[in-house]
Length: 498
Image (cartoon, rainbow, N blue to C red; front, side):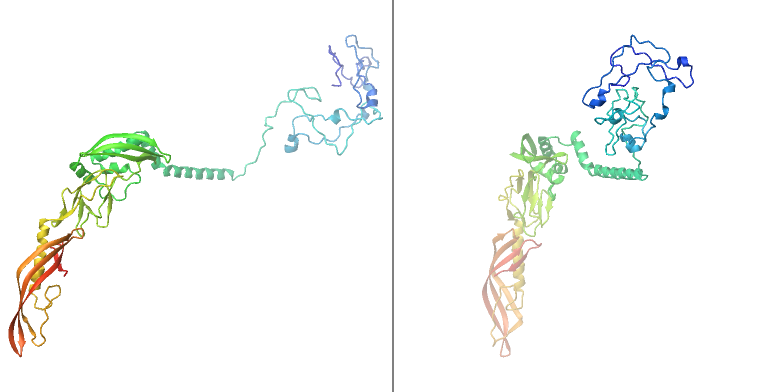
């Protein structure tokens, strides 16, 4: 409770000011109501409450000069007024942090009501001396901006222009350079990331704009449509991964396939998705008169729908004649390849050799990736020109042997042992053949080899030296020889096997 509080509501008169020194005695002192404090408070210490004398403000009238209602200027002992003590320790965060404060310091409990030891009496001035203990710390009294100051009863002073909730920090001179460098590095990294994703972004935009198939069944339909149009490059673009060998994945090969058997799409229907992120699509189409129903494995990858299956495959290892070129729909197949990817369609085989060719029909049908073409029906055969070439090759080899001037020439059927007592004169050796026949007995066309059996009766006419005199000696013998004819050369060459 304030020292000036009368204790009850009512109209409070203004208190006259203290007169100045040397003022007129008539106005030197005007009785003023004072607060009477019971001495029992100090006798009890903190055991009781304060008691005040009730004053009747309504009946109070200023008295004559010289009343004892209050001290006059001459009666005040100004020398006894205690001087201001040292400035109190800072009690607010502002005073502690930045060393200054525009706000009045809060009044502490010890300053407002000092403690009174039991049995002690009040000092001469009527106010107990505050007990200051070095170990006691002054704690600020909590205040609120919504309440008046405890010391004066007045309002709080206006707030300073500087926000007291912000701690101002001095920024290092190199901070702007470091910040700019960090921003530049960040921009470079972001630009690199955008460039690295440009391809995927382009694919995603292509999907959104409808430039690529936007569903699993749409990509299968587009794939089959490209095959039907003979657009091999477009069809291959829907495959992931794309085949590394593209010998048969060309427009020319697809065009020949559609000429042999037109490709027609019947239906495409999307199925359920699998747990691994793929989706099955069932498709039905016709290759000429052959109806095919199969399923494709699709997935959404790199911003577009793709087909995970191979287009199909042709094993060419068992079709090739050794040493003779192999052509499929007019495209030559390299010798070091045994298997080739191929789109669904019809494929015609050829050797473009006059000696060995494929029997009719010489076509294969690639139905789908999960159904291999039937190769067993395709066989090689020796052409009539090849047959005659094999016999001619044997004829050439036999004639070469008949012209030898030896009794045991290499690679020929002659093997005659002369008499040591009658040496043969080499220049007189003459072979003739009668009753000749040549027959192709076996064919191994995968190896491009033909076996020809030769039969004949040969006659050797020769002169021998008998005691220094030449004498004619005829020597007939039969010849049965198996000739092997290699058909991968032009013309073919015959070699005696036995």
